[in-house]
Image (cartoon, protein in one colour):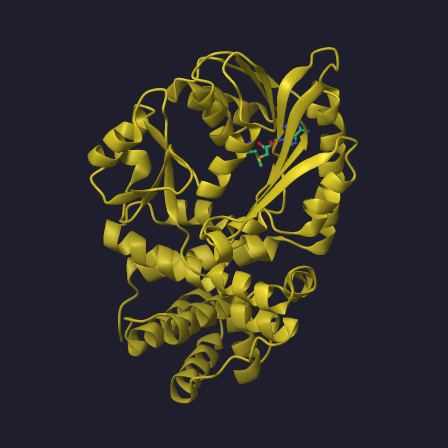
Amino acid sequence: MAGITPARRAAFTVVRRVFEQGAYADRALHGEAQGLDPRERALATKLAFGTVQRRGSLDWIIAQLARPASELDPPVAAALRLGLYQLLFLDGVADHAAVDTSVELAKQAAPGGGFKLVNAVLRRAQRETPQLPPDTTAQGAAIRHSYPRWLAEHWFEQLGPERARALMAAGNRPAEFALRVNTLVAQPAAVALELGVPTHPAPDLPEGLVVEGPLDAHGHPLWAQGAFMPQSRAAMHVARAVDPQPGERILDLCAAPGGKTTHLAALMEGEGQIVAVERHAGRARALVETCRRMHAGNVRVEVGEVQTRPKTERFDRVLLDPPCSGLGTVQGHPDIRWRASPERTARMADEQRALLHAAQALLVPGGRLVYSTCTLLREENEDVVAGASLPVVATRTLAPDTDGTDGFFIATLGA
Ligand SMILES: C[S@@+](CC[C@H](N)C(=O)[O-])C[C@H]1O[C@@H](n2cnc3c(N)ncnc32)[C@H](O)[C@@H]1O
């Protein structure tokens, strides 16, 4: 019997915390992987994130081979998902190790004979290699690419079947890793040389670098010096759409943790003023610290609500980056697709409309407002800006399948 390695035990706990307690996968992993060596930590990440991401496909197979996962004791379901993920989706893992450890994990975590079911189902899956249905319908695509059925239906309807399938498949591939060089303190070519890992320039983004190898970004001395921050290429296009000019007054609404605030500051070359509004006090404190690290001296952080900001003070340009369902970031956040729901999306769209209404009133006549989200649902994007009183002058959508980066919607209103 193979022993339970620390990586598999950590992955099992993360899967359980995500599906039994609603924990965020990245935070749960951060907690559980403390003290693991880098190789074990990498394996724990692959196992935990892969199992969470593939829950839809895995549960369909579990239902075919046994009964619905929702009817199983939760630790038994977690052990089965983890074992099946390794058998069916992961290369380079010995089948017997995947089976034996899942059986052992179920034995330790679930009272009674649940481990026998884990053993029987995994051995049958090993023998029969179950096949997923084709992705020709939204229902089949939801199972094959592992997304909630409602989301597959939305994307089939909004994007057409072919594009929806491509987007869903791309959402399961590893996310690109990009950095934004802080041009207030460093030049991209110099940072690229000093990073110690191969990079290439991000197309159309002079400050962007795409990282081609493993890099502990937050542990790098250049990060501490504020020479760069990890940021997707799609996110970098938001501040570029705002196009702030040195000397202008910019209002950044919904500002923490500050990736876009500090990008705006760099584009303004330290001249002019940015007021960054964030309602959550703890997040606002983190934003102040990020501005300090990134040498963004022209930012004033305000703790407050967008809707109650006095309309007497108006700005040349306004960025509104409201909370959204985040479904453009499925590559990096394996649990986000399982958190989303049509009801939650509708609530967010109501909030986004209210925030946009308030944001418009804070712009000088003839000014520019940029509305951005990291989601690819029409309800939170095109439908929201269609209700604005300012004209929409441009929209841009980036996506994992078409652009190889996070999914973002960026609309420019006004001038
Ligand atoms: C999508 S995040 C913003 C990301 C940020 N712009 C960046 O680039 O790092 C949304 C932020 O808006 C804040 N927020 C939500 N509702 C708000 C409101 N009514 N007024 C001010 N801030 C709000 C949240 O606390 C959260 O920090």
